[in-house]
Image 1: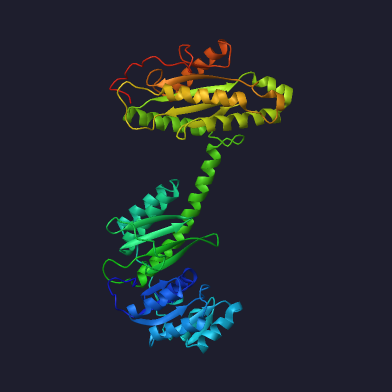
Image 2: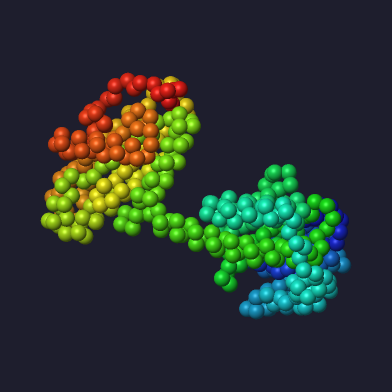
Amino acid sequence: MSLQDSAPHAPRLLVIADVDRLGPIVRDHFAPTPIDGVRDYLSGIAELPRAPTRGVLVGIDPRCARLSSAVTAMRQSARDARLVFCCEPAYESWGRRAVQFGADDYVIFPPPAGELERALRFPARRTREQWVRHTLSPAAPDPLELARLSEVVAAIDAPHHVVLRQMAGLLRDALNARFVSVVADDEVGNAHADGAAPSEDAGPLTSAVLLEPIEASGRRIGQIRVGPPDAAGYDTRHLEKLRHYSVLFGRLLEASTRTHRWRELAYRDDLTGMANRRYLTQFLSETLDRAKRERFAVTTLVFDIDDFKRYNDQYGHDAGDAIIRETAQLFLRCCRKHDLVARYGGDEFVVVFWDADPPRTSGSRHPLEVATVLKRFRSALQSHRFSKLGPDACGCLTISGGLASFPWQAQTVDELLRQADVALLEAKKAGKNSFRIVGGRDACEEPQAAPAASGGVR
């Protein structure tokens, strides 16, 4: 399959087998010559007659049982095209046998540009060395490029796929390409002229005409794949611009990885691995803002371990830490996937329950689901064997908690946490081992009909 739709009958180079390793090498040495790739000998034999071919570079296909038959068939299909095998030093005998069966030459992997030129008898017209020595400096970025670049930098702490998509959009505009894909850390960002993503079904050589590695700290972390140009062909300024952006993207992705790592450390509790107080405050604020726009309920639960100091004094602080970790994991397994469990400090936790479901009837609310979670947690707590309390301590540990809901008891983050804390104190005064809603009602009881919030709450 030709990679340059604008020139489907232009003489090409064809890579057969081992395309993931040989493809980038051929691209580096011979781009923008059209280059196709197939993954095995049988597909190569079928592909050769489909388009004019100047040269064929063949890797090792471990599925080939009869090299002589494969080479003979490729030789017949290739006609006058040079047929060159490429093999590791340990498999040089494979290359020598291929020549005996009809191949023109063989080279040792990884082949230098000069050796490939000699074997294929096809000049590397725009090898990387020629681009660096003989090109003008890359064209200065236009205002649109600068604007897109500022968007990439501003999104440095966004999820990786968002950053990659913005990088691809920037480069697509800069090179006037039909599409650009930026691949890093097993994620892909695509930008396409008509908004559709390029197909990756047939591998990296089936659609891109330019490939450029992305490196950071001396390590390859990704790749840029550039499709055919929208208008005129790529010139040396485009190629040099691609190289400059690959360097820049490597540094930006490295900075993005560091930012995510720092954020993870800043937002995670060291003891439990749960979200910490800092992340809780941010998450709750964002969730309340969304709840006000979309009109759904948000409930906060503040709970702690009854008489926790006694466990610390009797079993030691290591045991206390283990109790906190196991309690956190126990509640996490009992609650819904979209709810947040965070350690607030000491043995105190905060859980944020929010409605992620489609709209419901006006005036309905979600305490029934919260009550289900609390009952499930209480049951799990009764049967759990805490590792540091011994085999006879099953069921001895109890929890008390207080709940408050937006929009009924509170409107802000501070009010929600404060009202939930008031309800926690009510639970303690009522004898502990209970969950209370503001006003003193047991949260595990069936709720009374809720008043409709202003404008209707789902």
